[in-house]
Image (cartoon, rainbow, N blue to C red):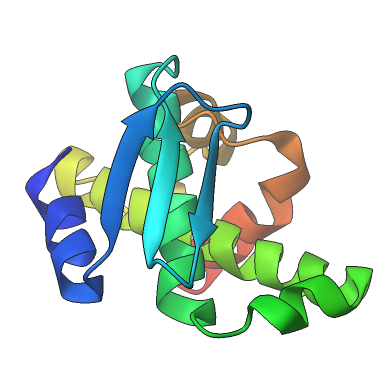
Length: 129
């Protein structure tokens, strides 16, 4: 885990548990704990951890709301994906030194294992960087 992600984990006081789980990752707000499947690649691990940190940062204490309607669940998943993609994009720009508006978003998505369903989030983050 890189140091800036470790700082987020520490700032949120989240426990990160890696083991054999039936899902790539999930966050349990009552325990303030993130569970990550040990069989993920390094890139998958980072993406899943950042997504779950998005839930911890933005939605702590809103578990009931998450389960209320499919619309609320979708909004919360969108928020967690946006948190993850924004972190990855900021890190990408820091490492490459590229002009943010000239980044090939498809290549960025491929390198960071971001699914096509999140293309609009990536485009929006680049546009408003």
